[in-house]
Image (cartoon, rainbow, N blue to C red):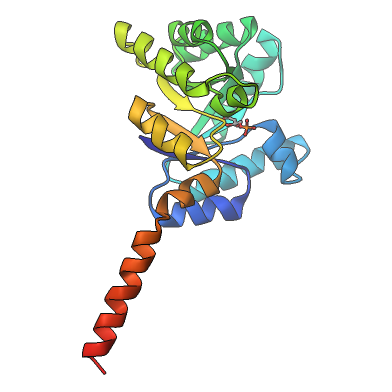
Length: 218
Ligand code: E4P
């Protein structure tokens, strides 16, 4: 499973990249705003800065909601850097734009996916990635992991090549469970990646090894 980090914070991206396990970055307009990145030129420059830190795909989301606007904006984003993947919302115009981009060889990430039907449409439109938001489903007492499983089953039935990018990951067990289901990619905060490191028996075992070494090497 590929690991993407879901942030626009350059320090967090650097830290995840330095671990050597990072495969890409996803951003969205809320994450950009959280970092105080505003104004078109600053936003475009920030995407390029991210591309220079990470070895892998960087999702950059269009703001336009109409077909023509998405095409114009998406083409501009794709021109920025070869690592850019154009992120498009799951709407009627978004599906049309996704098909346009896939026909042109521009990679896409269809976002805000909450049902298997939406995931089928994204695959039919040739999306590179589909982003089901499992955390937001869990937030409303709906089983987000079940959606990932349903999409996995459907895509396997037909050999769809669209990669399942499990999004809105909140914690380490989301990561582990998505891996068990066979999600192609997960995107989550730095804490969901670093949390995978933790086990008390690792800490206890290491302390014991070091103490025993110290006893024999005084
Ligand atoms: C996906 O690409 C989105 O940026 C993201 O995963 C949304 O996560 P949230 O529900 O924690 O905002």
